[in-house]
Amino acid sequence: MSRSPTAWIVERLLLVSGACPVQTFLDGLNGQNRIDAVALLKLLAEHGNTLRPPTSKLLEQGVFELRSHQVRIFYMFRPGRRVILLDGIIKKQDAIPKATMKLLRQYRRLVKAMEEASG
Image 1 (cartoon, rainbow, N blue to C red):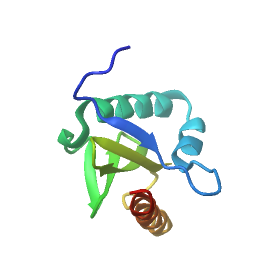
Image 2: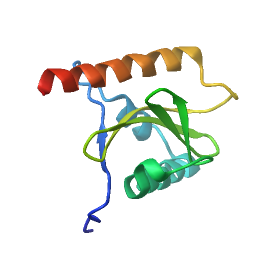
Image 3: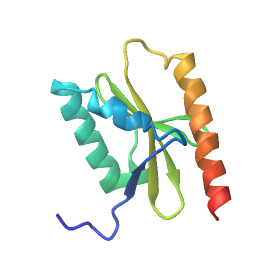
């Protein structure tokens, strides 16, 4: 499949340990949740920062969530039409759990630190 010249580059956060939280999340999905996740990621690659609620929502400065009925995928926009996928959850309550938000903040800082170190 050829990529549109306006398509966004979707990357996954890779931790120093070699772990990839969003890939672990995606690999654990099945059924409708897997279908929803694939559809959300396709929309993100095609539309990037033009996605709006209810599909995409700003959680806090620099961290967004892709949203379906239960699937939530967390991500950041970076220069060069890049999207960094951070992690995901199956939402079981209205609020994003505090522990998840804490991790997302750590991931946001890590992405920025890695970019500063490389450039």
